[in-house]
Length: 244
Image (cartoon, rainbow, N blue to C red; front, side, top):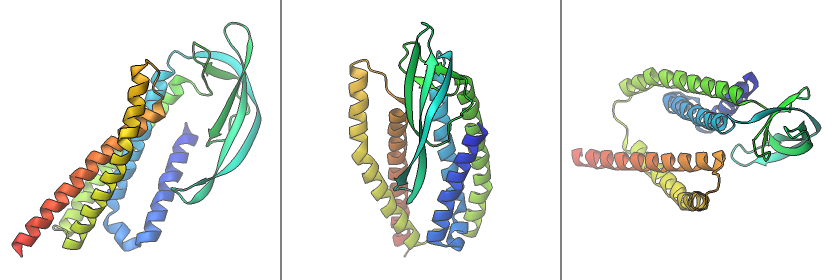
C-alpha cells in the first residue's frame, strides 16, 4: 500500500516539475491552486478505480501460489516524455479444484513481490490478483483521504489568488476560452467511441472492465468541465468588452 502511495506521489511531483519548468516558477506559484485541485481530482479518480477494483474482486478466492520469471522492459510514455520500467511475471497457483494453473501478468509498474505465497483468484478461475480485495479497499481509502487533504489545501490558495487577482485580464480569459474549446473538442472526439464500446458490452451482457469505465467517466467529466470553462470565459470576455 505504501509503495502505491509513494508511486502516486512521485507521479504528481513529476508532473508538477514538468509544468513548473515549462511555465516558470512565478506563473506556477500564481496558479498553484489549480495544480493542487488537479492533484486532488487525480487522487479521487485513482481512489474510485481502486474502490471499483476492490468491489469486483470481493468474491475472489485466496489460493496458495508463487511467482517466477520476473522480467522488465522499458516503455516510452509519450505523456511524460520519458521511459518507464514495466514488469511481467508468471503466477503459479493451486485452485480449489486441486489443480495447478499458470497466469501470465504483464504491464506492472511495481516490482512483483518475490515472497508472494497467496494469490486471489476469481470464482470462474479466469482472473488472478496478487493483492486482496481488502488491501485494495484500504488503498482506496488512503487515496480519498489524500484527495480531501489536497482539496482543503486548495481552498485557502484559491482565496489568496482571488484577493491578489480579483479580475482576470483579457489575455487570460482568451487563453482559458481557447484551452476550454480545445479540450472540449478533444474529449468529445473520443466519447462516442468509448460509449459505443460500453454499449456493445452491456448489450451482450459482457463484463465492463474497470479501466474502460474509468476512462469514459474521466472523458465525460473533462468534456463538461471544458465546456463550462469556455462558456464562463466567453461570458466574462463579453462583459469586459462592454465595460470598455
